[in-house]
Amino acid sequence: MPNDFNQQIIDEFRANSGRVGGPFEGARLILLTTTGARSGAPHTTPVGYLPDEDRILVIASAGGGPKHPDWYHNLLADPSATVEDGVFTYRARAEVLTGAERDEVFARAVEAEPGWAAYQAKTSRVIPVLALRQVAGGPPNAASPGAALKLIHDAFRRELALIRAEVVRSGPGLGAQLRVNCLTVCQGLHHHHVNEDAGLFVALDGQPELAATLARLREEHRRIAALVERLQQVVNATDADPAEVRREVERLTTELEAHLAYEEEQLIPVLDGTG
Image 1: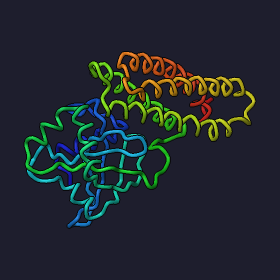
Image 2: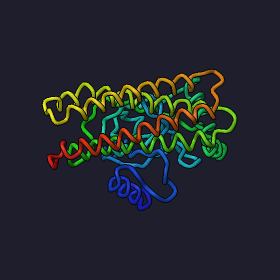
Image 3: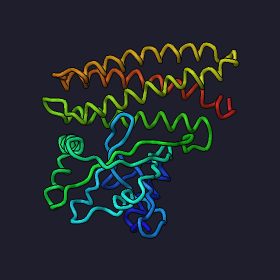
């Protein structure tokens, strides 16, 4: 069973689609459910994570304590886990990173948040880093199609807000993890819009009254794709300039915010049968 502090975070996370206050406000957080190595019972723990394009990374810091956290031992015994990210609940498989890959990822984490180095300094154990890769999933955790659309959109809004703040704090150089964060959200936007173009919008094409709306949304997708490509180019440059990255993130955010607001205004009533 989670302790009282963890249970409060779990309850708040689930009640607010992944948003929590207190010490974890604004943090990238998941709920990780593992199978107890001894009990065989499910155990859910709030865990911070790092984006890593098609997977996420978790660090078994235990606050710099002398022992690895229980969830790490559980994953050693059974690498299958359930991840809740506030939008989706999905099955994942854990892989313990070793050698140079572990060290490179941990260095990225320390560069982005020096607190990880402080945890390592407090303990004689080498703090493990694990990758979680989705193996099965389902629809968004929402009560209706319109609510699902809003939930996905809000996740992009939150991630871009985090990246904007990280760019501001980045100093004269662009950190390796910040590069990954930017590229991960770009990848996510690309997949989301491709899926909308090939799925949702095609399903709505049979409604003549939506023709102009869908034409506008498809054109906005093309404009956003160009901004995403430009941001990727700037981020991938060897001597990436944080000021230029910030400008491109701001351009993308401004265009995307307008697009998301229009799409929600036009499509949520249709999807939920209220318009």
